[in-house]
Amino acid sequence: GSALLRMGLQRGERVGLLCDNCPEWVLVDQACHAYGLVSVPLWFTVGTCQMEKLLKDSGVAAVVCGERWTGALLTMVHEGKLPALRIIVQREHLRAHVQMRGCACCVQMRGCNGALHAVPPLFTPHRTDD
Image (spheres, rainbow, N blue to C red):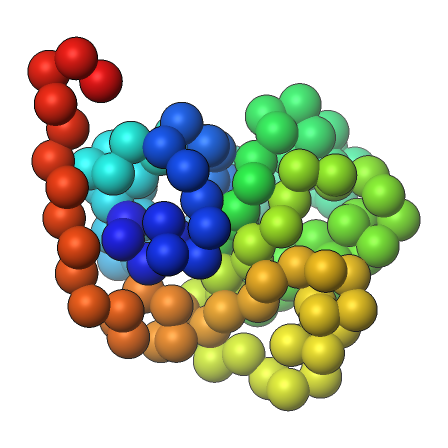
């Protein structure tokens, strides 16, 4: 959660979870709840057209995904179909050419090992009036 906030997300913004059942899904979902972000579960078995509609309708600002979705997400951003998406965190190691492609689309790209594990924790629990 703190890593997502340090990448520029604000409380109340939406984070798409686009991966199969894995430990990162649970980690990111719980982190979103702890830091006031809204987790948006996305089923990875739907087709690209349906995923595009789900992402656009939900207005996600960030997506945590597996490597197989990164290229499709960057294409959607490049084509102007996902104007709110500005951060992609890939579960696997992020290759240099993917990083450059994200940069060309003005999307912040991180591999999980470089985003979720390398940032020191900064926990700010919810207040009752949040």
